Length: 109
Image 1 (cartoon, helix red, strand yellow):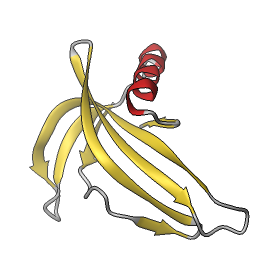
Image 2 (tube, rainbow, N blue to C red):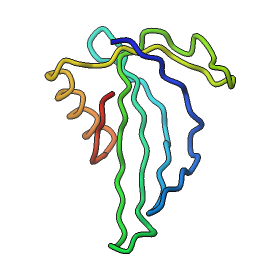
Image 3 (tube, rainbow, N blue to C red):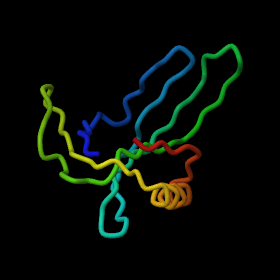
Image 4 (cartoon, rainbow, N blue to C red):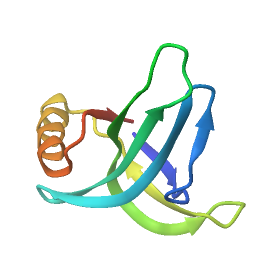
């Protein structure tokens, strides 16, 4: 399935009731004959009654179909991606990113 990905500002802290998260990097990875868009970020729980913690994570919108080929109504660049549905590819990509980026959580669109 093809979807639109809106490129967000990096290193902008987003607060929530128990802490914050932020996207640190936007990267592309050659995978077979395609290119995968992924984002690296981290989240921290620093305002919770149950303690503190955090994680480093990756979000994977999918295969790049068109890179920053348009802008949205606010002027942010958008790309077209194709979500990754093949479970073997997801497993392989998760392994690659865990090793390459030292992350603990990976979420596919």
